[in-house]
Image (tube, rainbow, N blue to C red; front, side, top):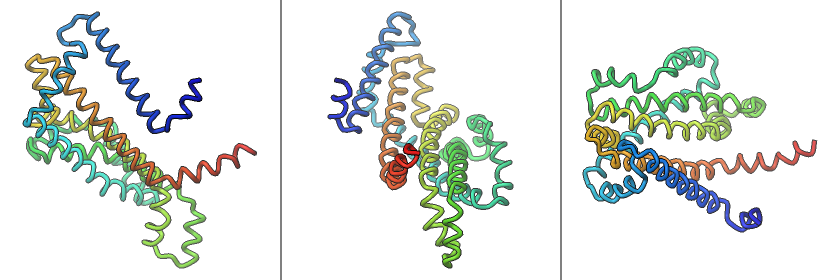
Length: 270
């Protein structure tokens, strides 16, 4: 019965319904746990939800959240335009990979929030330091996935193009980039999540404005329902951004998924 009901519901709508159901279950568990623990710092879900209308109507809070999204977008865009091309070059050139990989390996395990004190000294508490730390955090997954995508290109296709006289730039845009695109977009999805996390963290350290500033100020003033309401808003923003990007990603690489689906019967019939 469940399988037949599922087959009648479009996959996208079914996924949306399951997401809503999971969110409702989490809210119920939160409410029950908060009532059982009875701790001021852990208010019930209904108290946090009750704070949401006031936050949505507060123009200053909306401006702060908008500023956070702008910084997040700026850092992510810088990473896409710098780290992704560099990763592709690393995937196609051993010399470039040998030069960049040690530097990336050094920076990878360092918590990017730990760099904020230095960036505050160099760039101040404004947008520049926050955008730069978001750029640093999002560059690494983009660098790795772009490199892996460029490495995975079938060399026989590249050699055939060279034999047909296709130039270097034409090979890059007509063969390497399309073949690497699915892996690059996976890196973009990971980078988007990282950008949201680091955006909030940076604003909690450099407390001038933004969603992280609202969160930390509410915590300082012990307005715990507002703290959790802000966490809910950040979570919803992350969910919506990820869902929107996934739709774009699926549209851009539907040809690759179709090719994989068409190849499955060949492997399964072996």
